[in-house]
Amino acid sequence: MTLQTIKSLDGNVEYVLLPLAVYKALRQPIEKELSRISTEIDENDYVVFDPADYVDNPIALARIKAHVRQTELAERLGVSQAYISKVEHQEKVSPLFLSKVKAALSEKRRRS
Image 1 (cartoon, rainbow, N blue to C red):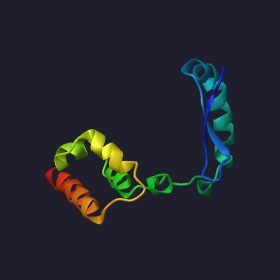
Image 2: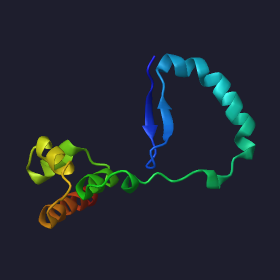
Image 3: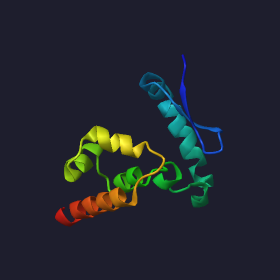
Image 4: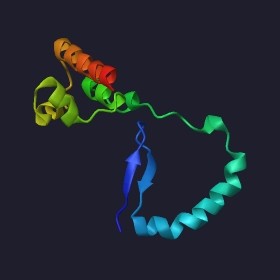
């Protein structure tokens, strides 16, 4: 069985993705071990997840932080979802388009 791994920014394997059957088989022993060591864990052992640590594109980052899907952003801007995807995969984004995206995302917040 080949397992997928997720690496940290420094390239070290940090997580392993398990098939559900394997997880279910291991869940009880894992929970038992976690409850045993939970008293030893310090709050400083955890790092808050920040998408900015993993997402370089400012449009993708703004969209993710606003909890908006590509399709929803595309609809607000009058473009296709494919176009949003293309722009989010570019290294550089025009300041004009970024300002339009931010306006569309703030408009969504005002309407909610």
